[in-house]
Image 1: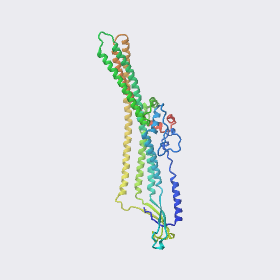
Image 2: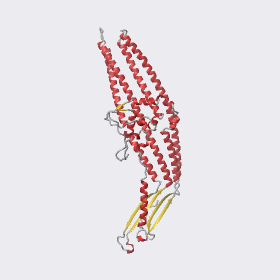
Image 3: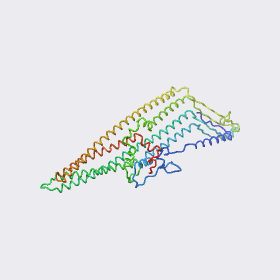
Length: 487
């Protein structure tokens, strides 16, 4: 690269040439791709954004409107709200646009970068009258022009843009996993609350029975025991209420809603979606290999390997010469004091090639090849981990299904014991304390069954995500209800 040379000018000719060059540069700068924002994510994300003149500005992000405060949100509503209003998702969207801008900047490097200069030289003492004219010097310089290297750099930047988009989709899928687990846990808390309320009424009934029990010597220990059990159930109910409130708070944070806003969730919407997609046997419908090939993780590894190929090609370009160019006006007899009418226009083209770099270029090339080998090993490890996770997910579902089925049958058997005990109590064959003892055992087993059911639903949802159903539902234009679901 050669520095600018201050010259006197043949003003009209070089100014005309520079004006045409600047006009061409300005028009090329206006060819940048339009920032597209969320429309790259596919349905239903872009279907819920109102039309807008300018999507992005320095102060405002393009977002879908918040759902009404009095609306009971479904799982779809939570996902769509989080996609636009959760701070981490909004930050990721900004990162997408920055990556696109980087690729546009890399594209502009495929063309020469031009700088112009203008200098005025005046003889202030004028001791030599033949050099008393004021000299005006104008020129421009092209520097760092490496067309081959910039071509590969631009191709690599396009791959980085695709990787950024896949990374955003993966982050959104992980966010959906967190929201889904919270919704299923909230549903479990609601069932637990109903179960505890029913058991609390039974405990109050038994406590009243102990107080009203007729006999020659009422047992104060039994009365105290019944009262303590009633208080225990009431405390557990309060704990469940607090846990449900905590889950709602977590959902507000995950979806980006205001923390003081009232939030109502419909957990059954997620159950309907899982049932519609046959989530209980979803891993048996596809092979893990086909799902892996269609996953964002696999696509990112493929792009990363292509990126390493471009890195190798870019390392090879270091053996090519770089070019710089100067166009300037000067007088051959003097670079400073001269008659401006005697200036000529010179073109200086310089090709630079390092002769001795102590193996730096060779090390760079070998390093690029080794980094590609590293990426290949990471891809193999990720593929193996996905296959292992697929098999482990199916085995864990089978264990969860077995635990739930065992707990359900145990509850069913105890429910029959309760019915028999109630009949015996009504006929005067046994004391009511026997019925309450069976109810206590039944309550404990119902708690265990509810926990087993929750774990089974969580495993179904996890396998539903693993099999790629989330991506097919939200990122592919299948014409389903998800693409049409309003916020």
